[in-house]
Picture (cartoon, rainbow, N blue to C red):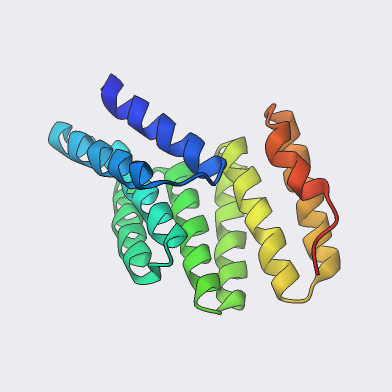
Length: 173
């Protein structure tokens, strides 16, 4: 179990820092194999979401969507709201990558409601950060700014000032 945790923590740190490498995919693959072998559905779903993030980073939207669908089904079966919120966040990233910003905004609203009610502060911060980006792309500058301020506040409360700082800078053109 410690090996899975180590792989998932390393992958999560790379994803947060957006320093995804070929090793990121390898870590997610190893974590998925280990979790599946142990029969741990929650860790397997988390590894699937890690793989989905690497697919998104590489522009493989279809592969990301398939991994997210598998993880989402697993989290729904386990009644795991934090994992489900994260799956919805990544599903929104797929929708945004496909140009469906209205769907992305709705998925993020659903994810936010889950994360606020039964989720984690870190997941809520990520969702709110992504919502700021979608609102900006939709032309809702005020809504985007509100979401950026809220996400930065959440990150600072978590002691993640390095993730808050980019949100506090003025948005680009």
